[in-house]
Image 1 (cartoon, rainbow, N blue to C red):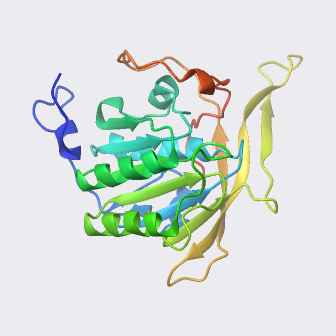
Image 2: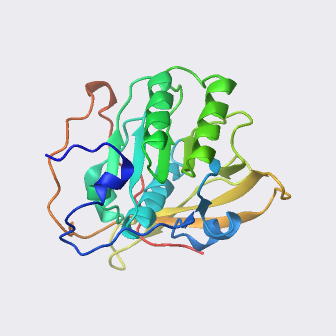
Length: 260
């Protein structure tokens, strides 16, 4: 197996799919309303914190962002502290697994260190998902988050922190609040036939721009996340087993399509 030393190594060399490496200044989320809040998407060199409690659709939005980046030919890295990443669900959401590096730290200190290494290694998009509360290792120190933000700025890396509660302190330039108490998550139900039982079809929630440097916060967009159906487009590589202590049901909502 070819050793990966930097983000560009994921897309260098022979490309059997014929996809050329493309550098983008903005990583679109493929959700029109979210992109409008962010001015088109996550900009290179920008640190954004996505705050969403349990069952808010936060990780589904993370998958959409990873899918948008990898489908455009970019490499991305996911630091999965919550150990919630499911390769099969990610592939159905459109994530190109050959362009994604998946890190699985056990503590927040390891997650921060991994993210700093990946940023320094040239990955254009790095996502840190802190999982569900309580976050292993706490919220971290302000100095560590600020150091990570400076690294993202120096290397022009788009950094997304997905967290169940605010953890980044003053480091993020923008904070998105998903499914807050004032904007509860609503379940979407559907029937396959008139008399058949109702089945969960997705979620509808509200995403609010809680902080934006240089802009007035308070703008919001409605986000609709739907269940995925259908088979995988290609065989998946073998993946390491999930940690025993985190073998939970994978019943989180998987994104089907973009919503305005």
